[in-house]
Image (cartoon, rainbow, N blue to C red; front, side, top):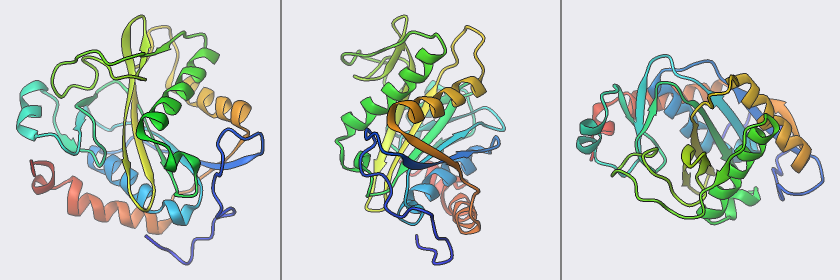
Length: 248
């Protein structure tokens, strides 16, 4: 996706996310969205990653309970294991994720970012270490899963993969990825901790952790018109369509 009218302040993006140099990143705080819109906007951000030129962290909620499932999963299997509706096929892989109480985020990175070139397991580990560090700032102790534990077929939070985030032995955070020539999309879900923390506490801690540990300079992103138009097109052509969601 190209838009000659959008000129980011830094087209170089991130060369090294662990550098002590100031790294310009965007964050996009979103209002709760309809399920199809949430998936469409994440894909639109990935497609626009070369134009935006820097990583974008987006926090978002849901206007109604829903469930998303991995791009390669069969909808007939998903329909049998959750009562939640609607069911929306994600642009990323992974398993079934219920969105009735979770805290949801996405991260998009352009090909200029180091993350884009890491193996999937490495970017997965790095994302969950980030969440782990943010929760630690809030007094919540977690650990990365050292290995996979078998889960119920197709259900993201029924077991855990290596580098999933655990609290007291149970998975509280998982993610899925998609990499194209345009960018890397990571979509993730965090189960709220039962100690009174709010979503706002966690979001602020995520921003603070990246600033303090990686030298990230955050800039709020106002959604450009071309990106909103692309997301609406994807809603109409894909995510609100039975032909897409039931394609397998």
